[in-house]
Image 1 (tube, rainbow, N blue to C red):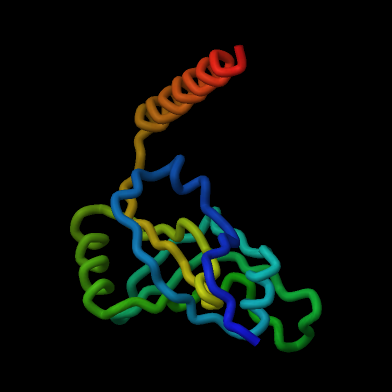
Image 2 (image 1 turned 180 degrees about the vertical axis):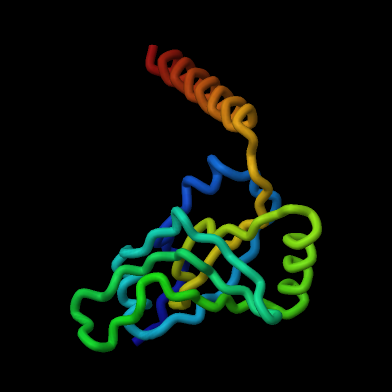
Length: 156
């Protein structure tokens, strides 16, 4: 059987784009256990309240909720257990320095399948103030109005 190719998005953290400025993104692998992979493939994962921490030279995703697999029995795992992220040591050191000194946060943005492997898009983020959120909402509304005007003009 041929190996699957391409990228298929499984889950996104839309709240992260509202709460944070995303400065950089990184792709990393996930160290998962059997039924967690099946549950993620079924789309039963929640990234809303998740964040990442650097401990002992390794990065862990905390608060990522992967629902127990329905067909699994005693082999199901704790839905909120910390998941280890797979990255190069140099990238981990760089991110650890930025997070500790400059007030950045590591936030999971998206989980996707890439060539049959589960990947996580990790964002290096800085928190937004309330006025930043209002400005972003106003910009989004303005763009939506411009798109509507263009589509009406095109239909005439």
